[in-house]
Image (cartoon, rainbow, N blue to C red):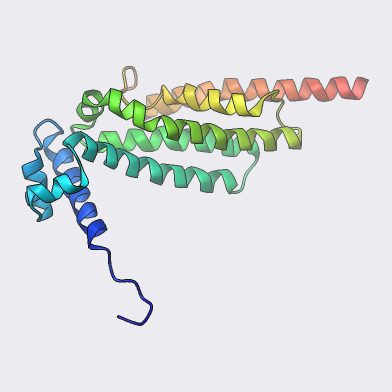
Length: 211
């Protein structure tokens, strides 16, 4: 190891191993049938070691949920700062979150069961992600207002509302059995929202011109 290079942190190596083992087992056998003993054995650590990092199986599942949402949040930041009009980036951010979560849940035969069994804990833990998503959307809305493409009286409130509204299109899914049906509904909803933002902007410009 070269001078100045940090040694690997064994604590995080073990934590990552536990999470990787847990995700593999839960995807294959389901949340209910996976035990801490199973996770410890798959990760190659003792059961006591698992409890050093996580107080319960619920905590492990919530940590996995946060890892997924951290990745999605990073994707949304890149989309928000990327190319395209404010309208295009607003749509891309909202669609990316709901479709990515749909794909993740559908990849596991136990995805719906996992979400349903832990919904209260997941909702509470993910509230901060929804708030952060609202702040990100508000920034895009402000760009739209500055360019004259959109008319929004309160971008912060509108961004928060959009984040909350589209969170209803994330798991658990009560009406959407296919990715296509979810995508179609989300796009149609966005069409209505964006048409309203555009028409208000156009009306405002017309009034300014007439005045």
